[in-house]
Length: 418
Ligand SMILES: *Cc1c(COP(=O)(O)O)cnc(C)c1O
Ligand SMILES: [Zn+2]
Image (cartoon, rainbow, N blue to C red; front, side, top):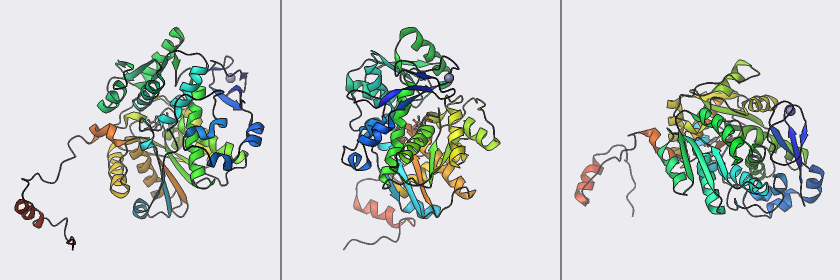
C-alpha cells in the first residue's frame, strides 16, 4: 500500500509524478513529495509507531518509498539526551541534546537522508549512487552503498578533514577529489548527473533524499512524549535539515499526533553564514559567500534550500545566530566537559549559537530547548591541532607517580578509597 502521491513544485505548485523529476519544468523550483495524509491518518497513529523498531523506518508511511527499504535498519532513533550539567551551566531549565553524533553507521545526521535516497533511487532504477559532499554525506553514501552492495561514486572538495576522506575510502567507493570548494563540486555534479544518468542523492534524488531529514523532527516529538519543544536550534549548511524538521512538526500537528509550537533557529559559522545574515538583515534572498571557517561540514556558501530556511525560521517565530571559529571550538569543549559528547564543528556551531541566543534573550531559559548535535568530533580531530596533550608522561612507578600527583593542586582534594 502506497502513501506516496507524487511531487509538487515548492514555488508554483505544479504537480509531477513521483519519478525521476527533481526540478519544476515551469519555474525551475525544487520539487517536494506529496502524501496521502488521509490514508496515513486512518492507518497509522503514535501508538502503532511506538511499537515499531527503533530506526527511521518506524515513520515509513511518511517517507517516499513504495516497496521495502534496503538500508537504514539501525539508522535514526538517536538519543535525545536530557542535559543536567550543561543546562545548569547555561542556566536553563529544560535542555535536550538530539545526538546524531552516534547515528549508525557513519556518525552524522546524513545517516537519515541516505537510506531514503538509496531505497527510492533503487526503486526508480538508478544503478549508480553518487553525491557532492563536504564529507559526512560521502561517508553515509559510502557506508549505506557498501551495506546494500550498490555501486557508488563520491565527489568531494580536496581540502576536507582527513578522517572524513578515510571514512569513505574504507568502504571502497570511487572517490573523486576536486580542486575548489563544495559549491564548485556541486555545480559540476549537476552536469555529471545529467550526462551519465546517475542518482545523485542531493541533486536529482533531492526531493526524496530531503524527506529523510524529517525523521529528526518526528523523533524529537516522539521522544518528548509527542510534544514539540518550545525552541529547537539546528545547524544550516545546504538548508535541507531545518525546513524538513519544520515540515515534520507541521505534519505531526496536522495529523493531530503532537502538541505544542516550536520556534526554530538556524546556526551558522561566522565564516559562512549566508542564511543567518539574510535573517538578521531582513532579506528575502540569500547572498552567496565564499566560505572561510573550520566548520567544513556546514561550509556551503550558496545553499540550495537557504531560502526555505529563511521562510521556516520566520514562520516559526525563531531567529538565527553565528559563531566564530574560536566560539565553535569552545562550545565543542564545553559540550564534552559537561555531557561527555564529542561533536564536530557543526555541533559546536549549534551550541555556540544557542548560547548567543540565550544571551540575547531570544530564547526564554524557563522553556524547553533542544539543541541538535549533527556530527561526531572523532572525524574532525584536525581542528584542535596540537591542543590535545596529556598532563604528564611518567615511568610506571608508584613513587614517581606520587611525586608528581602530590605536587598537583588542580586535582586535590581527592578522597582516598577506603
Ligand atoms: C550536512 C550537515 C548539516 C546540515 O546540513 P543541511 O545541508 O543544512 O541539511 C549539519 N551538520 C552536519 C554535521 C552535516 O554533515
Ligand atoms: Zn514550479
